[in-house]
Amino acid sequence: MSHIIPTPLSEVAEIFVGLARHGKGLSLDENNPSVKLIGMKALQARGLDFEAIETAHLAPDFDFSFYQIAAHDILLACRATEIRLALAPPEVAGMIIDANVLAIRCGPALAPQLLAAYLKHPAGRAVLLRASQSTTSQKNLTVKAVKKIALPIPPPEAQAQLVQLLEIAERQHQLAVFAAEKRLQVAQQIAVNTLFRGSSNGANP
Image (tube, rainbow, N blue to C red; front, side, top):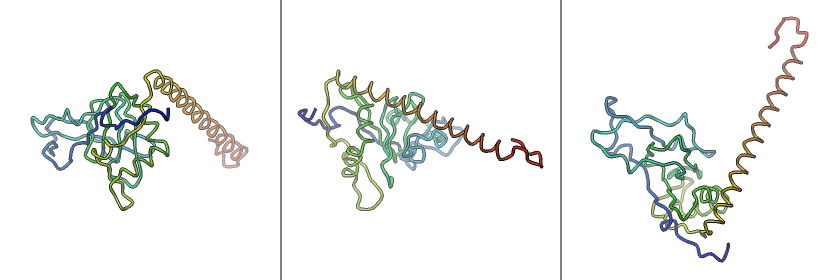
């Protein structure tokens, strides 16, 4: 696919940053309507931490639709010491992001699963690092910089095959992790049972 001319993300995706916490959109009044808010604490290196998703209250008559995310949006930490990103699962659709998080919403020309895989790969992470405007350890990604990131866009048929490959690999990875955790639990139980077998104090988990 090296013969395909790279296309800037600005041509195949919508890119936006979240709502400022100290702006006019949020309110401290708990009587106002509430919304689930995804900030940098919820966006970890391994993906979304659902327990860190917050509840925020909106200012009266504030239209927050611009900051709402959809399923399969790619969420990027704007300001962090490491590259953090996640592909938004369907259950977070309709939540909003704060100004520390940037969203990439792919159009029909680019499969979001494919873009997420690229950005998680060392090659994509290197591109994000170069795009970050910082001379310190903290990365600072802007909408303008991310829009300029360019990559080859394969034909739809090739993208569908690659997405299927990624989905199969992800399922296999999840099954392998689950099996490894079960083996560890069994080994721990055997060790504990053996340790306390015949114990005089009667301790027997």
